[in-house]
Length: 162
Image (cartoon, rainbow, N blue to C red; front, side):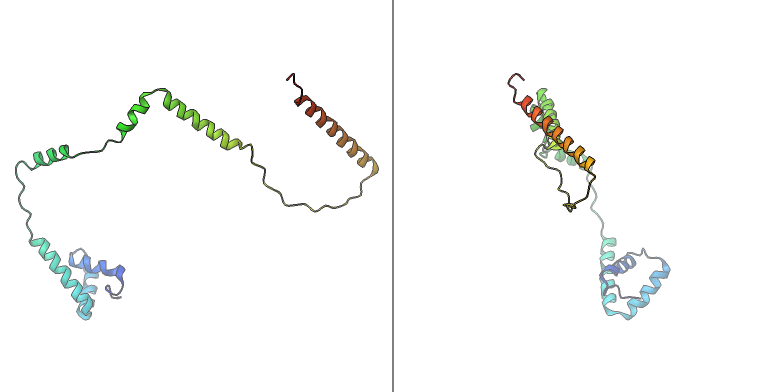
C-alpha cells in the first residue's frame, strides 16, 4: 500500500477511516499501514481526536422564539433590487422596440459588411496556351461586348434624370 500522507490525494483514506466510513477490508489494510508508518499514525491520531471532540460537543438548545427572531432579522436586512433601476426605462413602450430595431440593423450591417473583400486566392500561374484562331476571335468579341456593356452601365448611372 502506498503511504496516504506521502501522496496528498490519498489522505482522504485516513479521514474516512477516522470517520469510520471505510469498509472492513480497506480499514484492515489501512490499520496495518498505520501500525508501521509514524506519519500516518500521527495524522490518524489527530483526526480521531477531532472526531471525538465533535462527537462530545452538544449544541446549545434553541430558544422558543428562534424562528421569529431569525425571520425578522432577514426582513430587516437591506437587499438590493437591481430591477428597480431598469423599470422606468421599460415603462416607456418605445425603448424596447428601438433596442430591437438597433439590434436588427447592427446584425444586418455585420452580415453585409460592404467594405469587406473576399478572401484572396492563391495566385495561379500564368500559362500560355495555344488556342485555335476561331476561339481567340470569339473571346475578343466577347471582351468587346462586355466593355461596351460596362460603358453603357456607367453612362446610365451618371444620367441626372435618374
